[in-house]
Picture 1: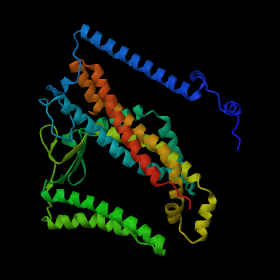
Picture 2: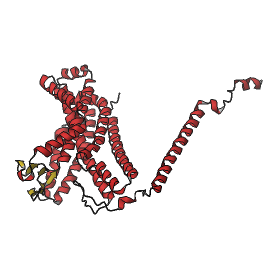
Picture 3: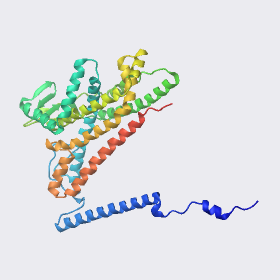
Picture 4: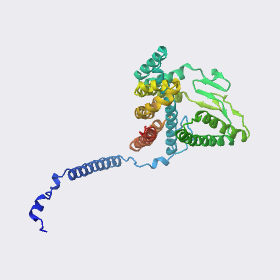
Length: 398
């Protein structure tokens, strides 16, 4: 068999392209160049900043976190005094921001979903009231709303000696809302553990009920059984632990109430302002998500004899969630970031505590860096959870 002509083979081979004409190699070189330029810029900024700080004899680093803070914080979820370190003070501010954001997110989702569904109600009055709420709350800046609610709580409520008592053990005054709580008892810890165990059992029960329904077509009363588990397990634990009923009731002292639990006007104003403002945007997100589901789905469900509440829960919302969740995530992130406005009404959130720390230590760069890091962690955590939930709700085609 004759050998092929080597000259023709060499002509058919692709010519070697110079690296400056290869798009892939040029893109790699461009990225390396940009990376080096950003690195050099960062090095210049950091070195120049450190040199200026050293010239002005300003200390750098995070060693100040171990020094005594020497200032009090009005509200704290953990024990704290002025003799504690700046690090513990910042931890108190972090927990204060976390608790108001967490509670605010829960109430915002509930209120926003309710207003969004009400906006689509066939009842003219309900629909118009929801529309008015959305327009008013969206058009008023959140900072003004915080000032308004703070003035309402601080100026209109009486002093502690003339406190209002709408119920036994509950007192309303310009120092906040004081109410009775159960006295500390070991049974309460086990009740909390029983509640967590109930949540795990409900999660496993829902998975089993879904698989059973797919296999046999028989429904299982998950909702009613879940309520019984969430209520029954803690009650059984409470009864087994001796059924403690003693309450820690607030009592009027010299200037304020002692005992029980007191919620400050700053916390209430911040929580109410953030929830009412963000819920207006969440309501529009819910309305748009529901309207994205075609009317044929609703008509088909109604033709099968499903009642309107079941149509909403079983047909409309599962399909609307894939439209609702992405913009809902943005609104929840906005609520967390807007909580930094608490400094305007005196609530000791992380920004407020960090500002006090910066004023006392003079280390503004480290303080601002900590503020950025904390809010970045909060935002990334919220986004990661919502992205996980979004993947769980994606409709899988068969």
